[in-house]
Length: 76
Image (tube, rainbow, N blue to C red; front, side, top):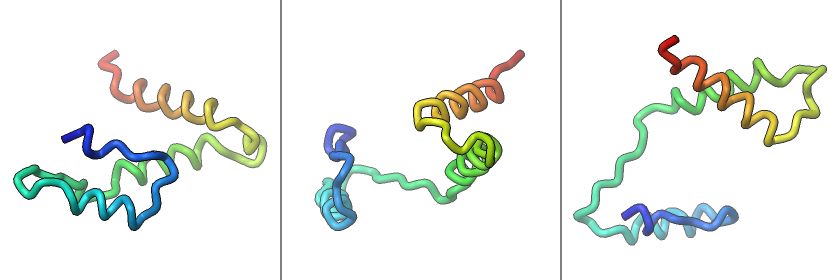
């Protein structure tokens, strides 16, 4: 089923939902019931980006978010 959900990065909303609609009825499609994870990422981005740090590249922001997330998950 995962192979069925591979999309091109520039897929339109209509094409996305058309492909979702074509998934077999027997397959379970689970969508998150909350956007809390997304909101946590947005909140972390607001902490990372400031007036002085507004020119960070996407790669740098991604690395910082990765470090923050894994630091919070670390048992140490």
